[in-house]
Amino acid sequence: MKKYIIILLLGLVTTLVNAQEGSTIFVNYLPAIPLGGTADFSDNISPRGVDFEVQKFLKEDLSVGFVIGWNMFRQKITGETFEHKDLTITGTQFRYTNIVPLNLNVKKYFTNQGNTMPYVGVGLGTSYNEKQNEVGVFVLSDDQWMFNVAPEVGMLYDLNYKTVLSVKVKYNYSPKAGDFDSMSYLSLGVGIGLK
Amino acid sequence: MRKIYKLLVFLLPISAMIYSCHPEYDATIDELDLAITKFDEDQNFGALNTFFLYDTVIYITDDEDADPPDINEGQGPHIISQVRQNLLNLGWTEETDTIGGIKADASILISVLETDVSFYYYGWWDWWYWYPWYPGYPWYPGYPGYPGYPGGGTTYGYTVGTVLVDMVNMNEVEAPDERPDRPSFDIPIVWTGAVNGILSGSDQNIENRLTTQIEQIFKQSTYLHK
Image (cartoon, rainbow over all chains, first blue to last red):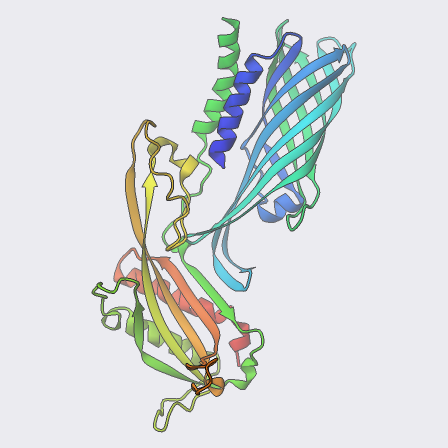
């Protein structure tokens, strides 16, 4: 799974680098706090997260864009007994959650703030979710594509005429799909954008 | 030049992320030990109070030509002793008289099996590819090394051992009859406990781990408690 994510991200970088004029491309470091079903499976705050984004400004205060991210959560659980199908299992669990959201988004900017440009936005799309529980020499794995919505607030700060500092808080939510619990997390993004 | 600059700006944080974090936890051998149980939900365990424990551990292998170790000279006696002690601690009564057949409500059969597991270590990008495998069910054996990738690789392996403790309800064992739909014994196994782990460490270490995990299979089977 990880190799597909990384290949996808590297491919996207190449695409973004060649993005057309008039657009701004961003890369954000994105640590996150798991919530809801995500936290039920692995509830540690994760420093492992990143997203890539391309924004096209339709007007001075309005942009549309595409974003792909990757957040990974993990948790070690010692000595807990759990059920799996008709088995009762006790052992150390090493739990990993990978979430890859792919969203189209729209952002409304509040201009006239000098070099800073606060904004609110929302993304809609899908996300790939994988939960993996390594217990003993076994791996219990489940994955699901889910609907995804991601409201966010943030701020852009012009470092110079080509480079922008990006700070944002984003909430990602995917409702329950089939037997897969709803997934959600809150991430804090810090990154740069190139015009 | 601008494209190279942009590429570097994006590749640097990605590279830092990939190489600075090792997302998989490191596990000790003890942390890979498991206690697994399964039971017949239709069985009234309250009706079973006595047990007969076979004093021999059966070694299971899928290699007919293999020369199996004599488990009964190794950890076998310890395994039998631990199973017996745990059942007695739970309030069961041992029945040792076999004259005229086993008279106990339940018969306890212990077996062990060993499975060799191997995996291919890919070197610096191993964390992309490494996954533990099911014993006897290799997960990604189809990754034969990716010819052309740098770094080469090395095959490693370990042996996974499993102790199986089966409980047979002797009150419901049915002998074969001449009906074509039942040509053999019907032996209802109402409970199975399995202790699974990697066979590594000193004999004393393995014995201690066996003690802990055998105790756990009975501890988590509350329906066996009297």
